[in-house]
Image 1 (cartoon, chains in turn purple, blue):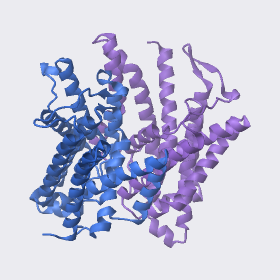
Image 2: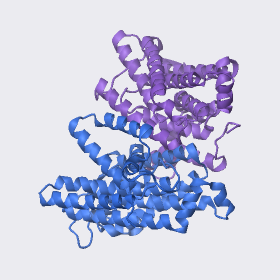
Image 3: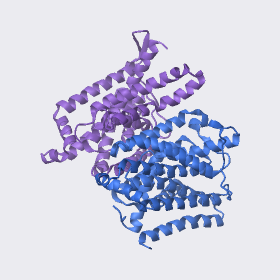
Length: 307
Length: 324
């Protein structure tokens, strides 16, 4: 094992973490403000990826595709909020789970209807192709580094938006006492729609960015959604800071686990066995981490102060 | 006592028995298989209903137990057919009763571990954690190549039940039907017992339960484990029905479907899972015959049920549930 390889894997882990953050930030924001558990968040990720891939194929520009992914995911989110989600805020979590599960069926089959069963492909834009050299003889694709940069920018942007702007102030107020800010004359329904559209746009962006790394297909959002759940459970549901730390922890643990565990086991058992057992163990690793964290802190690492 | 709900229940139970008998008499074994599917899914949802309906524990991970039951059937029969001993040199088996016991014990142990951690939390955390643990089992099954990994495991010959030829659709249906009836009986017994009362009370008012000296955590954990065991039993039957077990039995779609069955039928109702399973399989069959995209319409119907028709099919047929 070389330093270069380890560095590469670490960056891969961070890149996965950043993707998860984009998903988890929306989920945790929506839960924090509206108290809603949204299983269909993975569908918005898929919508973003499909929008980007089809607009990029149509216009030949990845950047137009990226804009389309943000717009489509935000619009889909807003429509879903107005038509369905709005009726669920006062319901118990079971109803929310079921209704958003039903939305997944509608989104997945609807997308399959529109785009067919075959995956779409999205090329990395020319500007971001190629690799960069890193210290220690390591090299890394520019595109993945760009994803990490985008994630860092979004994290900073969210921090500023929520901490420093009027909208952010209302969002925070909505988290702590939604009746009170309604009474103070803030249009809470519009605020909810905005927050939902914002979360959806982040999911759509994540889908579009990942779309250039893997194929764009129906069902692509579901594994990411479940990882994002693990992230927000670890971080503390409702906490953006928790989502950031949780995402990086899950991303790095998962990637390094898949890389290191088989090698570690190879020291004890023969290599073919080590690959098999190590692979199986690595796929369970983040859930074990989650279990350990919850055993110590049942409300996650950064539970929101109120609620 | 023949209340409206009891009458509806009786009719449902009889219908599920008479329909396949008639189908068999008319030489339509396909419908017998459909009825078997209903009975097995109803049993799986019945298990979940114990945790979800009585205990208010919205487990989004019961596919794990369903799949563990399925894999118990698959693994034991594959060892029996290849004469390869399993761990500790134990032989495999093709006898359903033995498989069921193994399925129930294995899932009970896993449920004890998952429940012990998950039940420390509640509400939305519980939903997500049970989902995450089920995914853990799912990924384990996919990445563990010994029993087929992603491709799953075929059961060459359906496992045997003493005194029945399980390869005949009707005989296998009757086995499943009797197990379902036994499950419903057990559910009714538990619901009426002291333990069942405590489980329901823990859902309604945790603080009060604790005040009278009952530990809600232990009650819930017990309920969760029993619930998982029943679902695992259904999983073993399901694997035998399809003569195939694969990680898809463990997938979160399966967990979602089990919840859907309960809601369609009526949460916490004795015959809710059966009503839900019958409705679901009928939807699947009718819509699947009309369009390849039946899941799209299923999603819309489900949305309609959640948003506008609360109480499920039994709520419609038998009026509101009496307990809160």
